[in-house]
Amino acid sequence: METLRDWLARPTATMLVILVGLVAVFSALEPEAFPTMVNLRGTLADAAILLVLAVGATFVIITAGVDLSVGSVLVFSSVLGAKVMDRLGNAGAGAIVGGLIVSVAAGGAWGLVNGALVAKAKVPPFVVTLGTLGAAYGLSLVISGGLDVRSVPKGLVEFGNGRVLGIPNIALIAGTIALVAGAVLALTVFGRWTYAIGSNEESARRAGIAVDRQFIGVYVLAGSMAGLGGFLSLARFGTTTIAGNTTTNLQVITAVVIGGTSLFGGKGWILGTTIGVFVPIVLTKGFIITGVQPYWQFVAVGVVLILAVLVDQRRRLKAAGR
Amino acid sequence: MVVSNISPVLSAQALVKSFGQVEALRSVDFDVYPGEVVALMGDNGAGKSTLVKVLAGVHRPDGGSIRVAGREVSFASPVEARDAGIETVYQDLSLADTLDPAANLFLGREIRRRGFLGVLGVLDNKAMRRQAAETFESLNVTVTSVHGEVGNMSGGQRQGIAVSRAVTWARYVLFMDEPTAALGVRQTRNVLDLIRRVRDRGVSVVLISHSVPEVMDVADRVEVLRLGRRVGRFAVAESSAEEIVGAIIGANDEVAS
Image (cartoon, rainbow over the protein chains, first blue to last red):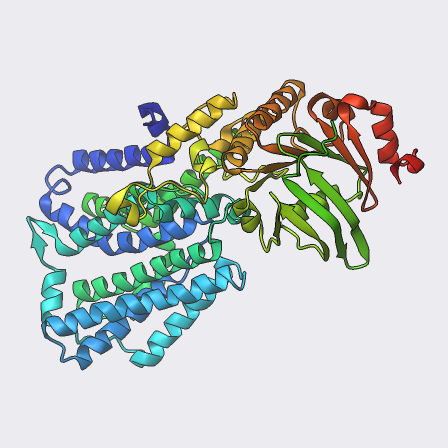
């Protein structure tokens, strides 16, 4: 196993220290309001959907790609899911399961489009996903007529706002997904090949790895996660959120990069992404509770993001100077 | 020792390859015998790299035939050449810089856990690290850390890892495209030692090189190409550097034809 020092040298560890530091500072400033169960539950619930999306984005960014379409795909999947559930009677387990399947499949289909264009047509991921960002958003508006769909099964909303042992259900789902995805990335052939194509696509090809299929698989994963995110957002808010996801893609990328995943590809960890998701949310909560104008959150997150990339580049330069 | 009574492990006959108007290979014959180091020499544009790329499955020849261990083959891709027991160490080494040495050694051929976990695609990192360490040891390759990223290692170590990977999978022939071009004196000596150890394991090595002293040092035979043709074959033990240089620059054409 790697030594403790190796681990502490990772950018992930730096961010963990920063996250713990933030929590400590806010707790010291507002000991009555910040370190409470209510605040923790709110933080976990806020983080859940973003985490699901960021898990998928971590795989994409490890391949040296990017997926700008996840916010639009979330909206598209939730609109389609809500419509289907409405058709299925808007109540009962059948409708809910149907909505879940349709949402995830719709997201996966967008991922398939992204992946096929990146892998087979060799269009840069930035351009492909910028295109599908617009297309998925436009189609959501076409399907919904531009109006949010508010008919979500009551049982689903109850589930989406319920909790087990004090932990929000959607946070439990997001946590489980992060755990499984983390294991897939760290322990399986799928994960290894994801790193390999991000590290050196040509050598992966020469080594006999099915590079195109791997790219497609990664984008389908990211799309499916956005689809699931759309379903979870229906469960949480009881409505689609057509206008509410214009910066979701950037929030997701920010979280992944803060978590130590390199935009240059080949490096990244789900644990880091998890920490990266919490940093902006803790900042927001902390600012609100301590009475700082919450808008400062954007400034602070911006600074943290640039610092995170700066640290990564420094490490790369040092490594390149071997 | 130009071998005559042993059949070659790799044999190419009358290979032709053109790129548009350029005839890179004009009916080249090339043989590799078991357990030997063959140096492929020639001036720039002689066709060395093209020949190796055809034999390694990167390019398809326009004409001619290739036999591996007596069996006629036709490679559609480098992967098929590898499956036939031919490995190539590319000049850029083709390593995944952010992965560790063992992951690179088993890139694309990862060992999975036994049983259900293996079906799920779970890697057996322990087995891969153990086998990688054994290979490094038997080839006398040093790596700074089995857990470190290959990108952080020295040129010589990276070369060692790339060669170890090729040796792990090569059954018949290992091609090396200018393996010492970017290395210092000591690292070059290590690579030449490595080539000998590979040969001692029974894998033939074909080495593209521009350095006559290096070739005289490590190779058993030299084949010289010029303008897409083979113009000379030399047993190193019976030849002088002058003869080889002469064939490369074309000073003794009557000998070659």
